[in-house]
Image 1 (cartoon, rainbow, N blue to C red):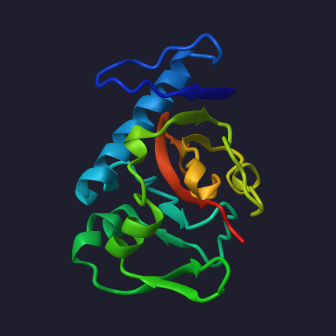
Image 2 (cartoon, rainbow, N blue to C red):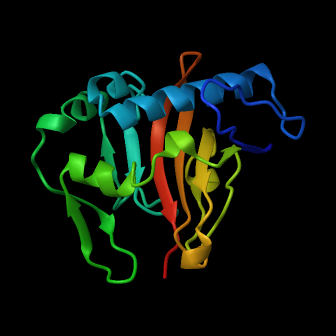
Length: 189
């Protein structure tokens, strides 16, 4: 597939001749933006409605997905995130190897909406915009998923090392795409 530059004006539609803008891609992008808006608003009750009823949703703090160490939550658990004061181990911090021990709300602040991805500069449809040195394995771990990569390029003052992506992945459930992966990607050591 490809990537789209995101228009800066409010209310503008995504249009490009470089990407296959078939109906399935348009529906995928619309779904991903709907999920992203619920995340931005912190509306976990609405977010839970998108979660895959059988698989739940996996959270990966970095590009390498590990189904043993990454957390997976059901829709009911996602809906309860605002009241959930439990600290979970979501994986290991890059560099230090220390456990990422956070409440769901803390995790979302650091590893989901650390940037306002609703304003992403680029959009990848079933395509990773940028990789660091971490293994990119979304296609291997979720071979049946369709995903959208919301991406920000890094700033010149940080020599581009502050780039970031949020990938939302969906799998079919009775003819509808349902959320199965929320993956955060950034520069890693």
